[in-house]
Length: 219
Image 1: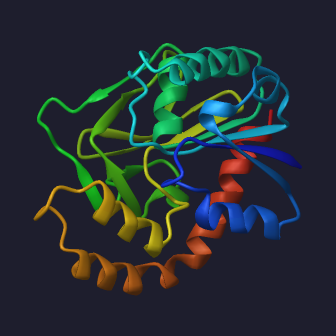
Image 2: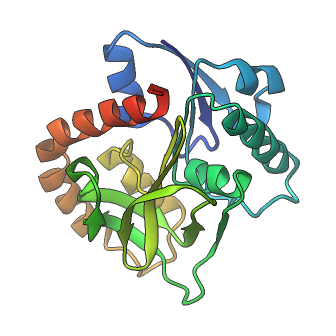
């Protein structure tokens, strides 16, 4: 399959998901979110929109406003679409839902399980790094929730996850150093946790990646 990956920040690459997709024989084209042409988004066989330190509500930034509009059109046409974190937030907002800062100021950083998952493949633990919360679009199925946040939702041929199944330990350490105020994350403890959990989750990651593709592409 020809897959267009929108890398919405260089700090949030496709990571383990991209490696798995390539290993399955899919052809990947990686484009920066702000540089994606309308034709690219409209015509991609499968679109994967990744994370960003921005929010879906940052529509004063031209490329975010533009991508939201193009995602709305794509999902209305039921073109296969996968969103991760910011990508999922953009999908929710584009389809009539919302994404906003959590009112209590919470920010999830690290590895977390998921309290309610309709499919065990979603249960986790998964990397999470977000302070925004999704309101699912009208008609969407909410497939996973934790601590008052939507962690996965689905529309016809579209699936979004708030967590980061693509994130490797190196990517998470970069977020801890780059985006985290001092004292909020113990980098050495995070590294130890990742070293323990990440290798043990290889089969779970592969199962989730396959599930995401099926949810996005099956009628």
